[in-house]
Image 1 (cartoon, rainbow, N blue to C red):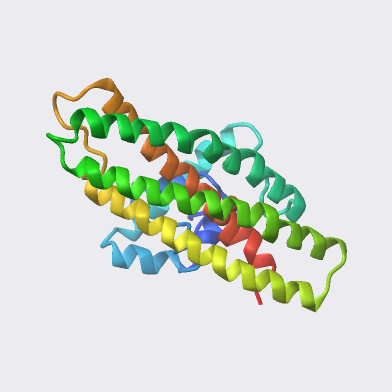
Image 2: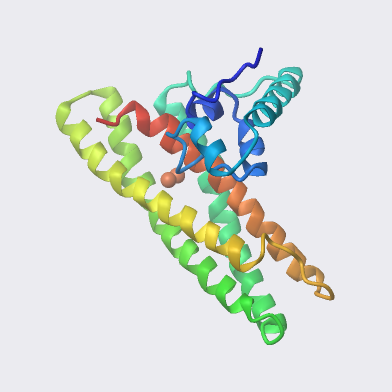
Length: 231
Ligand SMILES: [Fe+2]
Ligand SMILES: [Fe+2]
């Protein structure tokens, strides 16, 4: 018997087992912005085999059971969850967005004339960078303080304010997800062309790392944190 059911929402499964994100990434199942949908729906849409996906989730479950303890995101306070997201995922972006910015600029200069798609990679990445920089500020300076204030002293007025900002930040997550999809399309799933330099390879590798980190980050916000306050 499987630990999981295709009737569960995708977000619920990732909340139960964060490593499920790795399985969903492998099967191209969107678990951050499409997290509210039942797994069965995504399986149908992608033309996947339900038993195979459930088996992959079960295998991952067995594997993670063996490894050391992990943070139980479903049961930690919002304040701790916010601190975790800021210290891990926001810090990751603040360190790495400038690095990837430089890398995409370097490979555009060196390889752009022979790989015209790099003009688009550069443009899309910088659109993502600008959007995310503002987004992090909105969360850190506006949304997260409102949530912490609400938890200290709950009120309908605060819930209303939180929902208004949350709607914007959720839309921004969708927009970031769209850019990431576009980057995958432009780069043919980050396929490294023959004969390019190690910097090219490193850039594509880091773009994928940004994508993976962002998926987990948006998942924690959309499917766990925001749901506690959504009205
Ligand atoms: Fe965030
Ligand atoms: Fe966010």
